[in-house]
Image 1 (spheres, rainbow, N blue to C red):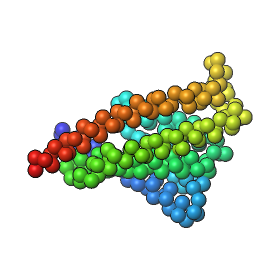
Image 2 (image 1 turned 120 degrees about the vertical axis):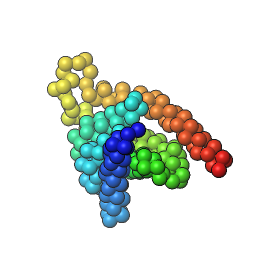
Image 3 (image 1 turned 60 degrees about the vertical axis):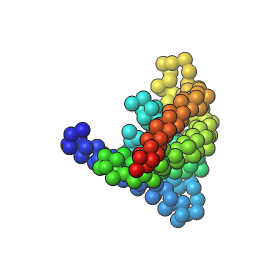
Image 4 (image 1 turned 180 degrees about the horizontal axis):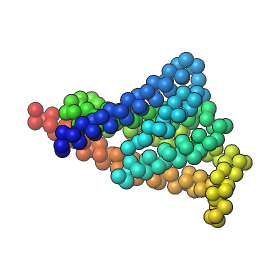
Length: 203
């Protein structure tokens, strides 16, 4: 890898890590200041939607988040203060803070082993947390508003189903798509932590 490419990747991942760190700080600061989970979107929503998550598995993850945040939460004000938003944003932010700092420090050659362990372990809890009581529960709660507002009705007039039907189908298939990603991450965990354990044995 060329020095220029390394510098670019380090800068990119550091900026991503910094952006997600600010998001996490805002979410937790709002929670501590108000003793409520209702302000998560107001405190960090605008920042999170401009910090991308970034190729099949990352693309699937980014696509799911983009739909959740921009198509649903940003358009339906009634769901923006629901606890599911706080749960989702917290899980996303903590996951990405660890992931991008891990990437950046790996490129610089100074990634501590504890950060690698967190990178390939915390997802076991954070991913299901972000999915079930987070993204899926909020999408389910948004369904009555989607139907009432006929959300994206103009766009869906050209197809034989509504956006309400689309989100309903997404809710049905989401766990199966997510499981594929989740199992892939376990394979990564075995590979990365196995190598780390092997290196320690050699030392």
